[in-house]
Image (cartoon, rainbow, N blue to C red):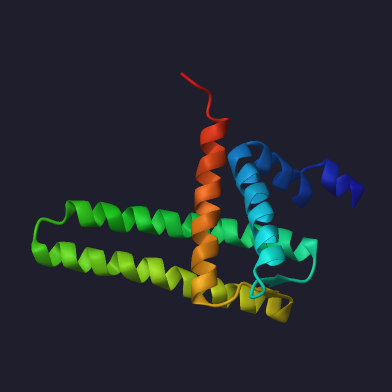
Length: 147
């Protein structure tokens, strides 16, 4: 197994991939901190171990990146719409993405972790996601080099 790691095995590829994406690693660290603070201070948010909260943060990162890409596509469609009907449809689609993503997230967490991780209901997970994205943006802004 050691030769597998040294010669391009899965761990080596994962480390190389993360090395090329340092902001993603920073995002996961921010998500772990925010998630563990939520576990500590919100009784409806539960994670049985630190390892589970770390894995939950990775899952949150993957899902939220997908949601942000989808939201950007819907916003582009909204901006490109020329008719009132097009704007209404794109706006409704944006609402479906925003609300539906929380339900998808809750379902995925339940499927992957079962009862060991619980992010609460729709309102707590919405507040958690808003907090995660706000903290992520704040840390990224702090890490940005001044011009």
